[in-house]
Image (cartoon, rainbow, N blue to C red):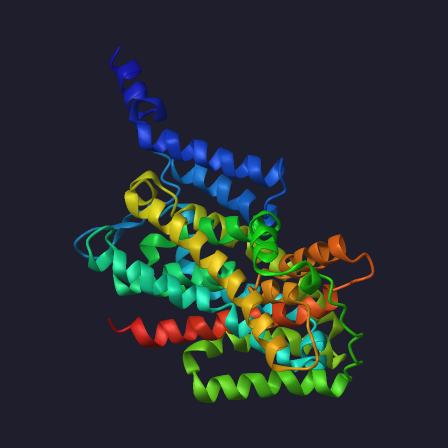
Length: 390
C-alpha cells in the first residue's frame, strides 16, 4: 500500500491544479488554430506544444536548476528552461530570425517608391499610443503595468513577433508568454482585422486608384541600401542596431550574389531550426502562474488596440499624402505599414482587387510592409533606450 501511495503522490494526476489544466487546454487551442485554421502554424504549433509541456505537473520541463549553499548543482534544469535561457533571455533567437527575415526580404519596392517609407513609419503610431494607454491603466491602478511592461505591450502594435519577443525578454520577461501569443495571434488575424478598418477609412474611388508599375531597382542599390541603413541606425540609435544589424546582414547575403549557399541556409534550415526552439521557449513562459491573471486579458486587449491603430494610421497617412501630392497612391497599401510580412501586403492586394480587378497592389504594398519591419525595429530601439533604466 505504501508503494502504491507513493506512486500516486508522485503522479501528475495527484499534483495537477485547475490552472494547469486550463493552460493545457489553451495549448490545445493554439494547436487547433495552427493546424485546423492555419493561423501562424510555424510559431503556434511549437508555442502550443511548449505550453502543454510547461504545465504538466511534476515533469519539470521549465524548472530552473537547483544549487546548494556551496554552488553545487543538486538538480539540473528542465529542457524548456535551457531553451529559454540560451535563446530568448540572451536575445539570440529573435536576432537569428531577423537575419532570416532579412534574407527573404526584397527592398526593391521600397527603393522604387521611397515615399512609402512614410506609411511604414505612420503605422508605428499604434505602438506609442498603446504605450500611453498601458501607462495610464497602471497609473490609475486599473492594471498593474509598469513603464517597462507598457513598452513591451506597445510593440505588439508593430505586428512583428520576433521584435516583440526581443523587447519583452529585455524589459518584462515575466510577460513574454501573453505578449508573444498576442503578437503572433494578431499577425495571423491580419486578413480578418484589417479589411473592415481599410474599408471604413477609404472611399470607393480611393480603393479603385491604380498605381503605375514600379521602376527596376539595380543590384548596386540593393547592396548599398542595407549598409547605409545599418550605419545610420547604429550612429543614431545603437539600441536598434542588433535587430536591424541582423536584418541588414541577412538582406546583404541575399542581394550580393556571392554567398548563395549562406543565404539559402539562412532563409530555410537555420530560420526553421530557430523557429522551433523559439516557439518552445515562449511556451515555457505559458505556465498557469504567469498567464492566468487580469494583466493577461489587458495585454490581449491593448495588443488588439495597438494593431488596429497601426493599421488605421497607415491608411490615414496615405490619404494625407494624396492630399499633398499630385501622384496618387492607393490608401489601401497604407495598411501594409504594419510589419506582418508579407501577409499585410497580400491583404491590401486582395481588397484592392475586390474593387478593381486590374488593380494589382502587391508589389506597391511591399514597400510600406518592409518599411514597417524597419519602423518596428527602430521603435524597439527607442523603447529599450528610454525605459531600460527605469
